[in-house]
Length: 114
Length: 115
Image 1 (tube, rainbow over the protein chains, first blue to last red):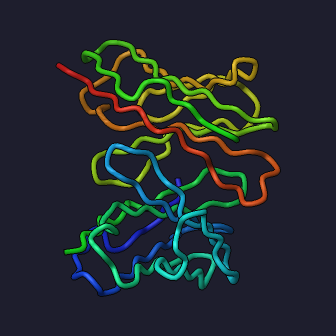
Image 2: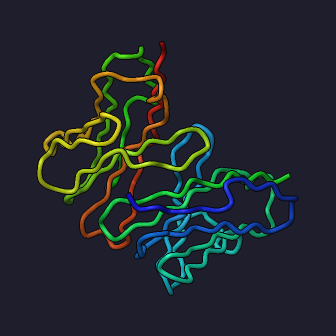
C-alpha cells in the first residue's frame, strides 16, 4: 500500500509553545488529507479536512486558530498546535487518500504538553 | 454514512480460536468499507477493503470480511488467531458521492488474544 509519513512520532513541549506536525504522502498525490485526534480508549475524532491549495474545513468544536492546518502541496500537510496546553496532549494521526479510495494513515504523533 | 457501530468494545479470545468482530453501519447511499488495525502507539494499517464486486473480501494476516447490504454489516473474521493479532480494530465507512470523502469510523474493538 501507499506510504504516509508523519513526523515527529513523539514530541514533548512546554505549555504555551507551538508544535508543528508534518504529514507526507510519499508515493502518491493525495487529493485530501485528514487530521484526527485520538483520545485514550476512544475512536478517532476528525479534526479537519484539507484539500491542497484551499483552506481546511474544521469540524464543529475544533478551534481553527489553535489547530492551524496548511496543505501546501498534494503530498504535504502540516498541523500546528499553537499555544499548547496540557489538555492538548493527545495522539494525533493524519491520513491521506485519493478520492473514494482507501485512506492511508501516518504512524501518529504522541504530543505531551508539560 | 450516518453512523458506524462496532458492537463489541472488547473481544477476548484464546490463541488459535476463531474470531468475529462485528460492524454495522447506517447510510442512505452506496458505501465502501474498510477495516483497519492499530497497534499501540501507532497509526492505522489497512487490513482489507470493500469497494464493489464480490462481497467476500480477503485481507492481510488471514483476515476476511463479508459485506452484507441487506443487513448493513461488514463483519471481520479470522479462523485462527495468533497472539500477534492483539490490537485495536476499526471499521470505517465512506459514502459514494460524498463531497469530502471522509470516512466514518466505529469506536473500535480491542481484540485480546490469550495463550
